[in-house]
Image 1 (cartoon, rainbow, N blue to C red):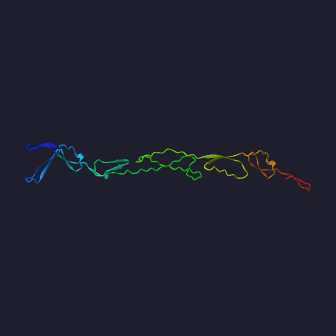
Image 2 (tube, helix red, strand yellow):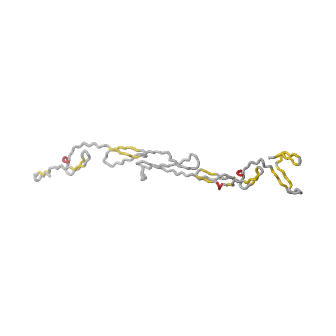
Image 3 (tube, rainbow, N blue to C red):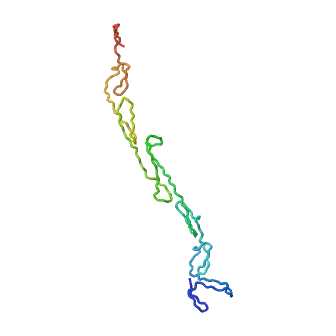
Length: 220
């Protein structure tokens, strides 16, 4: 800050500095500045650098820093106080999310079958940034489509197959209408038949045999 000074009775306005000769031949000089307006503190000046404040010499204490001094902990980047001569940066590690799938149900197992259910889990990043925690996603339920089929008894083998895309959970076989009333004594011996409850039976009925040559009636 300049001052008004008087030298040898002469007034000089707004004098910021005064140069005084150190030798008679005016070859060297001492330069004096007005430092009254200085308000810097040592914490405002680079470490090791000197300045004059209010007529006193001060030495700065602000440390020099670089990108190597930055530290990263999780999603927090710590920038220590100091003077940076160039841009300083520190990369935050990319987060990693591995989606998993938990399937439950008595109808589900790891054994291969003709009814596979494929579920592909997917992780979606809503907001880019450091991943500090992982939360469970919403449950998704998929249902196995089932059906029931009817079958009519037949004298030949039948294959009941499910409709494509469905699981056959039951087959209803129509009842056989049986009204026979034969007993084993009504059926020739060694001949088989089935009674009303579909039980296999063998007849026991015998037929008298008549010999025409001897005239003898033989019952066996």
